[in-house]
Length: 71
Image (cartoon, rainbow, N blue to C red; front, side, top):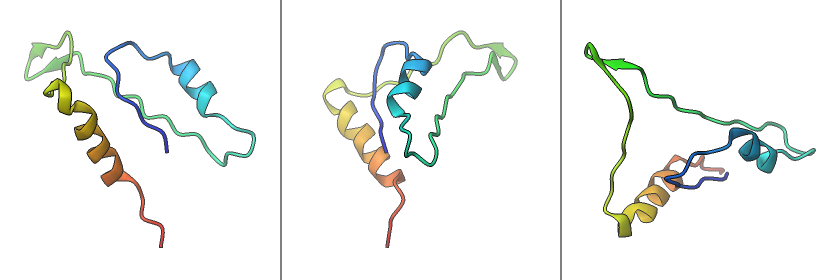
């Protein structure tokens, strides 16, 4: 599995090309997109916040807890 955290725009084609491998059984990309409205109000952006020194540790914890356990 591969994951990273960025505050920059992500080029999906570059991300896919970096993940693709001839021996891979599958490459799965999840792309989240913000709705254009919520509770009748226009949504123009979505911001996530975390205390900067902790954001990598918080993301790593979420990522590691989402990995399948192979027994």
